[in-house]
Amino acid sequence: MKFTRRLIGFGLSEKEAQLYLYLLKYDPKTPSPLAKSLKTYCEDVHRTLNSLIEKGMVRPSLDAPTVYAAVDLDTALDSAMKKQESELREMEERKRELQELSKEQKFRPSDEVATFKIIKSVKELVTVSIASANSIHDEVLLVVSELMLVIASFFGINDEMKKLIERGGHSRGIIFDVTYSGIELVQELLDIGEDICIYDGYRGLPSGVLDNKICLSSINVDITRASLNEPISMIWTDDPTYAGYLVANFELLWNRRFQRLCELRSC
Image 1 (cartoon, one colour):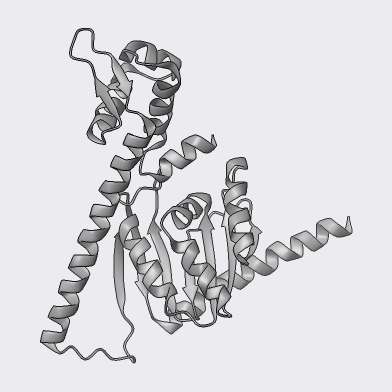
Image 2: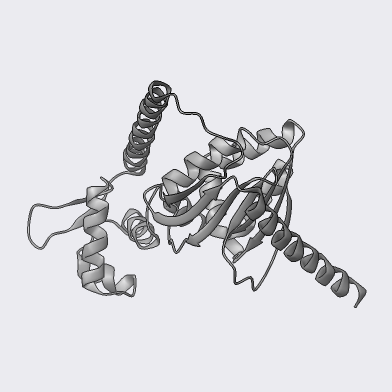
């Protein structure tokens, strides 16, 4: 389970991670026994194999019937890392170009007008989160799912949160949809120094508030893997009114959770 989750952190879907791990453990196979062992359909296996071939993690034989073999782990992970590094370098280059264009245009942003923008991918979310974390002075409030913890752990957001706490800031997090395999991720946040509570049965959407001003609020985060290319829909804004609404919602959840804990302890 841990190995599969780590593979997902390198940009694989759950099906891709399970199939690649199976080939690593049980040697090359044709699609039919793979479908039987993984309890799925041959068409599904073919799609997953083609995706892994594109990622450079599986190679097909030249003879018939085609046999599929897992590329050795080091080579496969190097390929996945190089792809993500290339994507991040492209974003950095676009950022520099936009900064230069901004200087040429002599923009004059006003602090009195709230800014809204839509975040459309996990890659954008990671970039915006890290940039925003560098400007925090006081407190971060987060309501996130276990999958968001995977993203924060693998793509450097937790490192920035650790720096915030080391310079005197504070972070509180409400985590929902936590499974047994997510306990390690929750412990990582506790080790950093964040205050965490687990909220079972939460049916809202993830959100975050930084210094009671900068907000991240989900529209749709129906993702199944921790990949930079996964599409999402989130709102980023520096509107203090909206921040006040999210803060009030967070405090309501936080206090309700601790009230429940007190009731349990008194029983």
